[in-house]
Length: 404
Image (cartoon, rainbow, N blue to C red; front, side):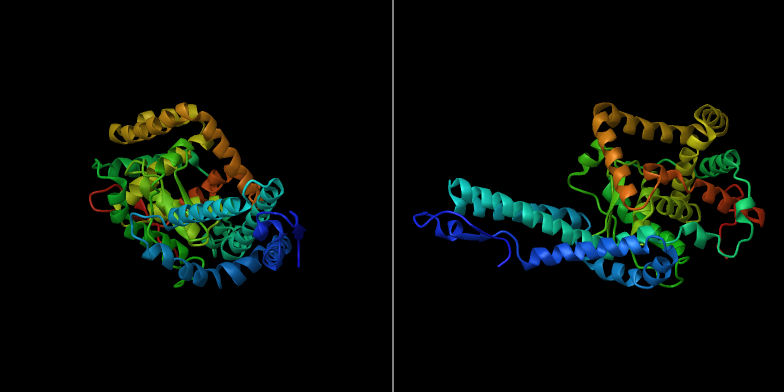
């Protein structure tokens, strides 16, 4: 017997717990060994992104993602399968702990055993989840950069100048042309309308990894505890265990498509935040939907603030952006600042945790990886505007953004 601990005595009133307890057994040991194997495999394969790219991310992961996504697909659109599983798991854990405490009565040593067993079982569960996480989705962090597939066949890509201001002007022209008044329908209703459009756009981008085989993303969900996301400054997240994308219900209608595309890009296997952002921007900018293209243009414009510099960016926006689009940006800033003023500490904690998590997953830039794909996006846009132009109905000329 592994981990056997003798407690109590011959006159103990609680024979079942007091006589003997197995602190840990073969199940806990097995979960620990599986976690160790996953960790060691990750260390070995970390320096070989092409092996992950072609041996896992393109060959195995699409089938795995397609298979695991059946749970959120069958869950009603108003319910997050991930949130439901978390709540049920928490209740089950509390019920188990309550039962064990009741069985222990008020014996000090018996209570100590329950406490130790809870820690051991909880740790074993976390180790098992680590194995599932790594083998089911986490290895995608080690795949080759999405930009390698994006520019496959293009020569001398690195020599293309990165014109941030030129990109900003193009995004402003596109946003001005596509500006619209969005109705105030609830986010859940917007998701129903946008989900098929985002799915189609992100799967077209996913074709670059292996044409004809990108998995079908499940519906985007909203949490019942949505306010917590806003308190921590989170716009969306992806559940790697149930392959389920989520967005913040407090996002404005024009913001939704890019964040939906970002979380669905994670489902497609673009684990890196750099790759997910790049894929989401491209999915929206080359979409047939005016709503998606408008969202992509405004979000890219906002992302360009940092490389351009705030003073120069403000000058470009002041002179080149319509009042309607400026109003959308102001509404977005007011929403974020309203929560940040009230929950500044939570914003900071979330950023530090996210930065730590990304670095643990071989993302050396941490949270700065979100903006690391802008150079690739600018080059991609420039490549496709040099060869020719296409005009949408009633719109300004747009770059030809079709892939090879």
